[in-house]
Image (tube, rainbow, N blue to C red; front, side, top):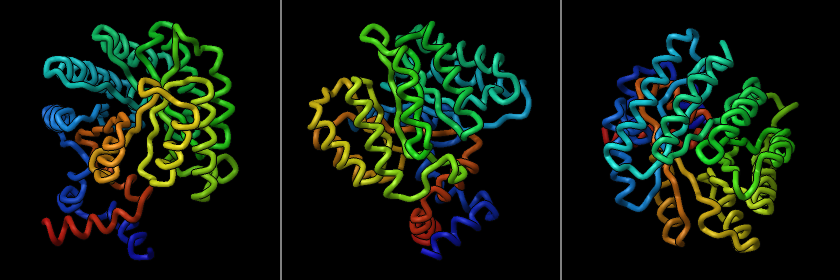
Length: 304
């Protein structure tokens, strides 16, 4: 345990070329061509995908414009190559903390482009300073694109179930809501976030049960076996049809569990990240799960 945490702590200070040896197992690559190739391969294996361009927390609106154009190109490439998947994005990449109106315009253009192809954009939930802004953003987008935009909720935040309930007024058979439910990865104070493993899992399953009770489509985003098993039980309990949920997993993480889930007949979507900002993503994932340190050692000294 202490060794894993040590590796997680020193990884950000190691040469990027060395870190890439490990990271490429969890990142599709550095270009859209890499992401398309990985996505098509996953489609062939029976998985849906969602593509995510890595990056967040920009400092200039010029960067937001660049990110918007990259996403528009992603959509065109996905359509061109017949990839079966959709898109995930972080609003801070489009200026959310600089100018929320500019961020809305940028993201609206992306959702509009996806809607032209009857596709879907997932608005990721970021750290606690962004939650209210991102819920507001989602509400506004959903008014215009009721079937083409979804949101993420993080079970470790105390407020999550109340936030889900607060959005029930925009959910109907004609305008269904689509959420991803995950544990949450950002470092938050214990005054607003659950910290203990069992406590987080308990609230994850409570949130998931409420979503199923309300008939809300849910992406069950977890690699945790107890949560997968808990989700199975809730799916059976509420007889949730396969067009009302999917499991979701990160590219390169727990592939054997991924195969087990689809082997039982459940739909599953793989989150496919790519881009030049892979380093920050890799270090954050390791801090979230220090057990991945074992994979780093194997990658560097066995495969490498």
